Length: 115
Length: 113
Image 1 (cartoon, each protein chain N blue to C red):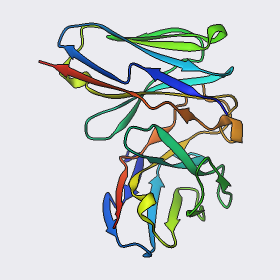
Image 2 (cartoon, rainbow over the protein chains, first blue to last red; image 1 turned 90 degrees about the vertical axis):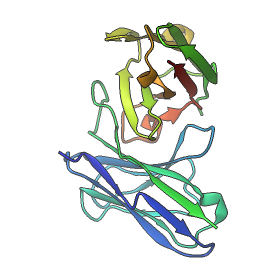
Image 3 (cartoon, chains in turn red, orange; image 1 turned 45 degrees about the horizontal axis):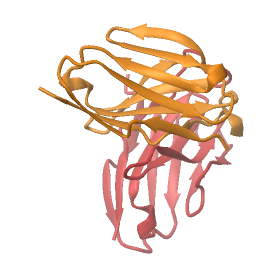
């Protein structure tokens, strides 16, 4: 059981380049999330999805787009990368509804550097 | 939005020592979780504890919702306990904007052999 898998694990981009981060989960979770983690900070929510075909903005959505074409996949796109987007990106998934004994499951992260 | 403050920001312990990490939050919540981020960056959920006390081995957590704080206790610390401990809270169920987790900045714990 792989859980939540993020690809790639590392990437270096030049300013202005575009790329897509892929998150895949095999737990049949309805909800999926993209977070970013900056040095000395906790995680901040970028976008999330409550089901196939739906997305919603989180706390820091600017500069990112997302898509949830299949239930098991959640894509995070950077159309024109900026140095401020250098960060570690985490994907998570969960069941819907109440969260008692149903924690969010996290991937191992993607380290992204924008030069 | 809800503010989450964790203390202390950094903690250095000798192996075998006990420690208490604190999480204060600015509004009522119905979801509080503690996470451990290990030195390799992986996030592990430790407790779901919006109120009351739970224990799991050497770790235990207590949340006093009426006073808006939670404590994570680590007893007989080991080097494998090193990493960053995050507290995260929300006010609603997953799926709504109020259900999204808000993370504190974490407590970085270093356990020396």
